[in-house]
Image (cartoon, rainbow, N blue to C red):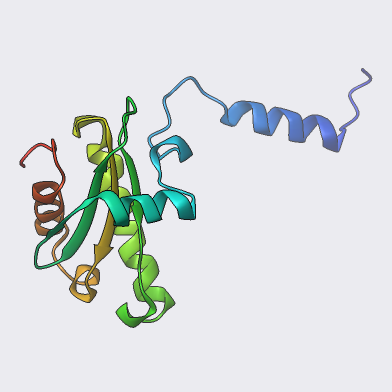
Length: 136
């Protein structure tokens, strides 16, 4: 090459530098209840557990991992508040997913106070409801 700058080469190098061997710490799609039929099965066949901040529905799924879903109603607030609740739930599940025993489908229904509650208290309360979760 004669030293000219090619925009496509820069893009290739930029994306290659972002790839790493470090494990992703997100909540992968395989660990989520995604389809409507899966949610319906959890509601129909599962058990309900409630606390001050959450109502959860749990159902054995027969898999080697637990899957999580959530339903955040519009009555909980505007889009900003609902998204804040979603982000908090995802972070709790991301941090503790490996510690929760496998084999469950879990659907979480938060209450409106979940948007403003202390994060550590929220974490403890949710983990108490989930079967096989560690007690912080």
